[in-house]
Length: 220
Image (cartoon, rainbow, N blue to C red; front, side, top):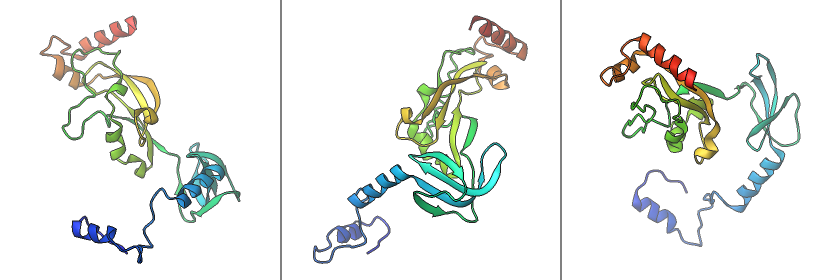
Protein backbone atom coordinates (compact mmCIF):
# COMPACT_ATOMS: atom_id res chain seq x y z
CA UNK A 1 0.00 0.00 0.00
CA UNK A 2 1.24 3.46 -0.85
CA UNK A 3 -0.15 6.86 -0.02
CA UNK A 4 0.75 10.51 -0.39
CA UNK A 5 -0.22 13.65 1.42
CA UNK A 6 -0.80 14.25 5.11
CA UNK A 7 -4.55 13.67 5.42
CA UNK A 8 -5.40 12.38 8.93
CA UNK A 9 -7.96 10.00 7.40
CA UNK A 10 -5.34 8.42 5.18
CA UNK A 11 -2.85 8.08 8.02
CA UNK A 12 -5.48 6.55 10.30
CA UNK A 13 -6.47 3.93 7.75
CA UNK A 14 -2.81 3.09 7.15
CA UNK A 15 -1.90 2.46 10.77
CA UNK A 16 -5.23 0.75 11.50
CA UNK A 17 -4.68 -2.01 8.94
CA UNK A 18 -5.69 -5.39 10.40
CA UNK A 19 -2.99 -7.76 11.57
CA UNK A 20 -4.30 -10.44 9.20
CA UNK A 21 -3.44 -8.24 6.21
CA UNK A 22 -0.17 -6.46 7.08
CA UNK A 23 1.27 -3.74 4.87
CA UNK A 24 4.03 -5.85 3.44
CA UNK A 25 5.81 -2.95 1.77
CA UNK A 26 6.20 -1.04 5.02
CA UNK A 27 9.52 -1.68 6.80
CA UNK A 28 10.89 0.31 9.77
CA UNK A 29 13.97 2.31 8.83
CA UNK A 30 15.99 0.85 11.66
CA UNK A 31 15.01 -2.81 11.23
CA UNK A 32 17.59 -5.53 11.73
CA UNK A 33 18.18 -6.23 8.03
CA UNK A 34 18.99 -2.64 7.14
CA UNK A 35 21.15 -2.28 10.23
CA UNK A 36 23.08 -5.39 9.23
CA UNK A 37 23.47 -4.08 5.66
CA UNK A 38 24.87 -0.80 6.94
CA UNK A 39 27.31 -2.66 9.16
CA UNK A 40 28.50 -4.79 6.26
CA UNK A 41 28.94 -1.70 4.08
CA UNK A 42 30.95 0.00 6.83
CA UNK A 43 33.23 -3.03 7.12
CA UNK A 44 33.79 -3.79 3.45
CA UNK A 45 33.09 -0.40 1.90
CA UNK A 46 31.42 0.37 -1.40
CA UNK A 47 33.06 0.41 -4.82
CA UNK A 48 31.84 2.93 -7.37
CA UNK A 49 32.62 1.35 -10.73
CA UNK A 50 33.31 2.56 -14.27
CA UNK A 51 33.10 6.31 -13.66
CA UNK A 52 35.16 9.13 -15.15
CA UNK A 53 37.10 10.15 -12.03
CA UNK A 54 38.49 13.67 -11.58
CA UNK A 55 41.19 13.24 -8.96
CA UNK A 56 41.58 16.94 -8.15
CA UNK A 57 45.21 17.34 -9.20
CA UNK A 58 44.41 17.47 -12.92
CA UNK A 59 44.41 13.70 -13.40
CA UNK A 60 41.26 12.28 -15.04
CA UNK A 61 40.73 8.59 -15.77
CA UNK A 62 38.07 5.92 -16.24
CA UNK A 63 38.08 3.65 -13.22
CA UNK A 64 36.78 2.78 -9.77
CA UNK A 65 36.64 4.37 -6.33
CA UNK A 66 36.41 2.60 -2.99
CA UNK A 67 34.56 4.39 -0.18
CA UNK A 68 34.64 3.13 3.41
CA UNK A 69 33.26 4.72 6.59
CA UNK A 70 32.37 7.84 4.62
CA UNK A 71 35.88 8.38 3.25
CA UNK A 72 37.58 7.76 -0.11
CA UNK A 73 40.20 5.10 0.58
CA UNK A 74 41.29 3.89 -2.86
CA UNK A 75 41.27 4.82 -6.53
CA UNK A 76 42.11 2.41 -9.31
CA UNK A 77 40.80 0.06 -11.96
CA UNK A 78 39.03 -3.29 -11.58
CA UNK A 79 38.69 -2.86 -7.81
CA UNK A 80 36.83 -5.64 -5.99
CA UNK A 81 35.96 -6.78 -2.50
CA UNK A 82 32.81 -4.96 -1.48
CA UNK A 83 29.37 -3.81 -2.50
CA UNK A 84 29.49 -2.42 -6.03
CA UNK A 85 27.55 0.28 -7.83
CA UNK A 86 27.92 0.83 -11.57
CA UNK A 87 28.37 4.50 -12.51
CA UNK A 88 28.95 4.02 -16.22
CA UNK A 89 28.46 7.30 -18.09
CA UNK A 90 28.83 9.37 -14.90
CA UNK A 91 31.66 11.54 -13.60
CA UNK A 92 33.05 11.72 -10.06
CA UNK A 93 34.56 14.88 -8.63
CA UNK A 94 36.22 15.65 -5.29
CA UNK A 95 33.99 17.55 -2.90
CA UNK A 96 33.98 21.24 -3.82
CA UNK A 97 35.00 23.84 -1.22
CA UNK A 98 33.15 27.17 -1.06
CA UNK A 99 36.01 29.52 -0.24
CA UNK A 100 33.98 32.04 1.74
CA UNK A 101 30.39 32.77 2.72
CA UNK A 102 28.18 33.65 5.69
CA UNK A 103 25.90 30.60 5.67
CA UNK A 104 25.19 29.38 9.15
CA UNK A 105 25.48 32.84 10.66
CA UNK A 106 22.63 34.64 8.89
CA UNK A 107 19.60 33.37 10.83
CA UNK A 108 17.62 32.68 7.65
CA UNK A 109 14.29 33.24 9.42
CA UNK A 110 15.05 36.80 10.57
CA UNK A 111 18.24 37.66 8.66
CA UNK A 112 19.99 38.71 11.86
CA UNK A 113 23.45 38.98 10.22
CA UNK A 114 25.30 37.35 13.10
CA UNK A 115 28.47 37.50 11.01
CA UNK A 116 28.86 41.29 11.50
CA UNK A 117 29.71 42.55 15.00
CA UNK A 118 29.66 46.32 14.25
CA UNK A 119 30.76 47.32 17.75
CA UNK A 120 34.27 48.25 16.56
CA UNK A 121 36.01 48.22 13.14
CA UNK A 122 38.88 46.08 14.47
CA UNK A 123 37.83 42.81 16.16
CA UNK A 124 40.45 40.14 15.31
CA UNK A 125 39.64 38.28 18.52
CA UNK A 126 36.13 37.28 17.34
CA UNK A 127 35.52 33.73 16.09
CA UNK A 128 32.78 33.10 13.49
CA UNK A 129 32.46 29.56 14.89
CA UNK A 130 30.43 30.92 17.82
CA UNK A 131 27.77 32.31 15.44
CA UNK A 132 27.32 29.18 13.33
CA UNK A 133 24.01 27.31 13.38
CA UNK A 134 24.51 23.73 12.12
CA UNK A 135 20.82 23.37 11.20
CA UNK A 136 20.99 26.44 8.99
CA UNK A 137 24.05 25.04 7.21
CA UNK A 138 22.57 21.57 6.69
CA UNK A 139 19.21 22.89 5.46
CA UNK A 140 20.93 24.61 2.52
CA UNK A 141 21.79 21.11 1.21
CA UNK A 142 24.93 22.39 -0.49
CA UNK A 143 26.28 18.85 -0.50
CA UNK A 144 23.66 17.97 -3.12
CA UNK A 145 25.45 20.35 -5.48
CA UNK A 146 28.81 18.76 -4.66
CA UNK A 147 29.91 21.38 -2.08
CA UNK A 148 31.02 19.25 0.86
CA UNK A 149 32.81 21.92 2.90
CA UNK A 150 33.06 25.69 3.10
CA UNK A 151 34.95 28.53 4.74
CA UNK A 152 32.57 30.37 7.07
CA UNK A 153 33.69 33.95 7.34
CA UNK A 154 32.86 37.11 9.28
CA UNK A 155 31.25 39.85 7.21
CA UNK A 156 32.65 42.86 5.37
CA UNK A 157 31.68 45.57 7.85
CA UNK A 158 34.91 45.56 9.86
CA UNK A 159 38.53 46.10 8.84
CA UNK A 160 39.43 43.01 10.85
CA UNK A 161 36.25 41.06 11.38
CA UNK A 162 37.56 37.97 13.16
CA UNK A 163 38.68 34.46 12.35
CA UNK A 164 37.18 32.08 9.80
CA UNK A 165 36.29 28.41 10.22
CA UNK A 166 36.30 25.50 7.76
CA UNK A 167 33.17 23.40 8.19
CA UNK A 168 31.38 20.55 6.45
CA UNK A 169 28.03 21.30 4.85
CA UNK A 170 26.17 18.52 6.64
CA UNK A 171 26.41 17.19 10.18
CA UNK A 172 24.54 16.44 13.39
CA UNK A 173 25.98 19.35 15.39
CA UNK A 174 28.61 22.06 15.24
CA UNK A 175 31.35 19.74 16.49
CA UNK A 176 30.57 17.19 13.78
CA UNK A 177 30.62 19.96 11.15
CA UNK A 178 33.90 21.54 12.21
CA UNK A 179 37.01 20.77 10.17
CA UNK A 180 39.22 23.59 11.47
CA UNK A 181 38.73 26.71 13.54
CA UNK A 182 40.93 29.82 13.23
CA UNK A 183 41.64 28.90 9.61
CA UNK A 184 42.09 32.51 8.47
CA UNK A 185 41.69 36.13 9.57
CA UNK A 186 39.06 38.18 7.72
CA UNK A 187 40.23 41.56 6.38
CA UNK A 188 37.85 43.93 4.63
CA UNK A 189 38.85 47.05 2.71
CA UNK A 190 35.38 47.78 1.38
CA UNK A 191 32.99 50.70 1.46
CA UNK A 192 30.89 48.70 3.91
CA UNK A 193 33.36 49.58 6.68
CA UNK A 194 33.04 53.29 5.96
CA UNK A 195 29.26 53.11 5.68
CA UNK A 196 28.90 51.47 9.07
CA UNK A 197 31.53 53.37 11.09
CA UNK A 198 31.86 56.88 9.66
CA UNK A 199 29.15 58.14 12.04
CA UNK A 200 30.60 56.16 14.96
CA UNK A 201 34.00 57.82 15.02
CA UNK A 202 35.47 55.17 12.73
CA UNK A 203 37.32 55.39 9.40
CA UNK A 204 35.92 57.61 6.69
CA UNK A 205 38.47 56.81 3.97
CA UNK A 206 40.62 53.87 2.81
CA UNK A 207 43.61 55.76 4.26
CA UNK A 208 42.15 55.49 7.74
CA UNK A 209 41.32 51.83 7.22
CA UNK A 210 44.95 51.18 6.23
CA UNK A 211 46.18 52.81 9.43
CA UNK A 212 43.82 50.71 11.55
CA UNK A 213 44.99 47.55 9.79
CA UNK A 214 48.70 48.34 10.21
CA UNK A 215 48.26 49.16 13.90
CA UNK A 216 46.24 46.00 14.54
CA UNK A 217 48.74 43.75 12.76
CA UNK A 218 51.61 45.35 14.66
CA UNK A 219 49.91 44.52 17.96
CA UNK A 220 48.81 40.99 17.00
